[in-house]
Image (cartoon, rainbow, N blue to C red):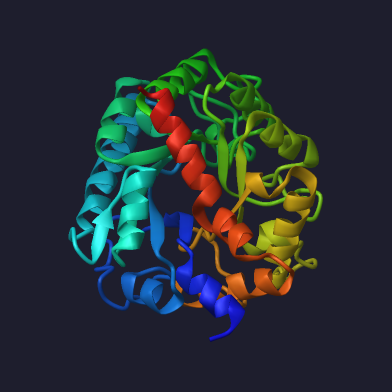
Length: 336
């Protein structure tokens, strides 16, 4: 066994953002056409996965909001059923995650993407946490009632900015997320939203699937000022395997990004803000997947690339889950 393979086998590898098909998700216990299922996780040595209850941004009328809320709730309940309690354990805390790893079980976690699914009712945050969700992504593409997004939706009537960052409801939502133990995810958020959230939240924030704008000028990426804010507030960026975030595409072409480009973004973030503020994610089945890490079965390739660049067992552990587990613990303590 190579050094990289040994490190990978021992590491609690956690992918913090994986989308699922909805409705009619396939049986993840079998080989599927999705980039992540449990057989692929086993083959690739991916020990834990945060599956996402995602709701697309739509009209903010009563019907649209109710539909988003119902969808998020149903998806969270479904994600829990992906665990059988033995070979696959549902985890909602860092301690449960570590216990699953120690037992050789795959860990199933959940989160909600797009605060629009709150339907303006902050009591849903406690309900989502009770269902096991560990974070809420404040926005998706398009502004919502909580905050401005990095990519407005003109077809929904969005201006460049609507709230100037967080709305009053968004600020209240962050306070409630801190109270109930949900992490604040700022991927998809406008810079103004992200900076304000970092200042406001009592618990460090996380960008669960974003990359570095200094290397690829994409509106979904974080610039160096945003990275510096994460370091100043104890937060975390989870570099993700989405080609367009990693390397610009030529005119009319496809981004040529590979796992090496992903490691370049890790290197940049580590040099800028330190190893304690950087992690890894795929955004599989939400657009992620690159040569070298095309699906969960390829997960060891990313570890090998990082080990080849000089990252040791301690650093690999921090990148794959150690830093994210730290935030999970901080959220749990703040909620007490």
